[in-house]
Length: 288
Image 1 (cartoon, rainbow, N blue to C red):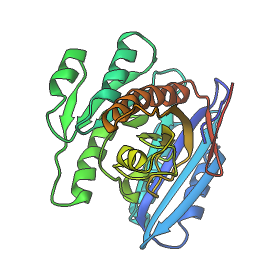
Image 2: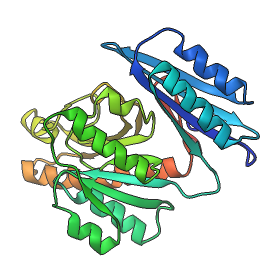
Image 3: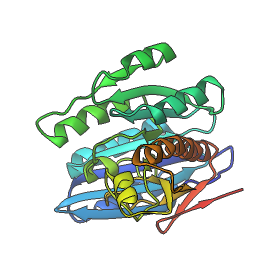
Image 4: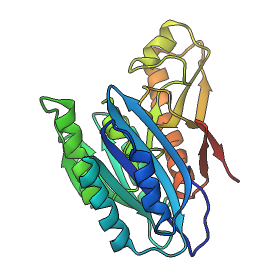
C-alpha cells in the first residue's frame, strides 16, 4: 500500500524470498517490533514451494545500520533472501524503464522528463537488445542490455542486480515483452507498472489489437496496472479508450493505440510519483 505519512516517519519495505518454512513471519515481525517499527501491511504467498512475503512498516526513529544488521542475521539464520527498501521523503524517486522493441512509451517518458512533467530520477533504461542505446545516450541516461539467457532465472538475476545497483524505487515496463516470474515480482509489490494494449481483462496477451480488429470491437483501449504474479491481472491504475471508426484499419487502430498507451502509462507514473495511489485488497484507489 502506498500511503501518506508524517515528515518525521520513515517507511520501509521488507521483502523475503526463499524456500517455504515455518516461523518466517514471526521472526521478521518480531525483528521490526523490537526496534520500534509499526507494521502497516503484510502479505505472503507460496508457489511451488517458493515463499514470498512483503511487509511495510513505519518508524518514528530508525537506526538503519542496526536494522540492516538484524535482518542480515535473520537472512543467514533462515537461509532466505531478505531485502530492505527505505522510502525517504527527502529524496527524489529513482525509476528504471524496461524496454524491448517498441519505442512509443519510452519516447513519451523521455519527453516528459525533458519537459519537467515528472519529478524523479530516470536512473537507467534496461533493454533486451541495443535498439534504444542511442536514444538513451542522447538523453544522458545509462543504458544496459540484458539479453535472453539460457534460463529466465539467470536473465532476471541480471536485471535484479541492476535494480539494486541503481537503488530503484519504481520499475516501468514500457512495452517490455517478457513475462516476469513470481521470484522477481514478489520483490517489488506495487512498484512495477505495466501498460497493456487492452481494456483488461478483455483481449489479454501480445495480440490484443489484432483480436480487437478481428472481433469488430467498437471501443479499443489500454490499461496501466501494477504487475502481480498472475499475468495481466494486477491492480488497475488507469485506463483510456477510443472509438473504432468504420474507416479504421488494423494499422490505424495500432497507431491510435500506441499513442494512447504512451499517454496512459505516463499518467500512471505521475500518479505514483505524486503518492496518489493506494492499493487495498487488489484494487487501486486514487486520492485527489
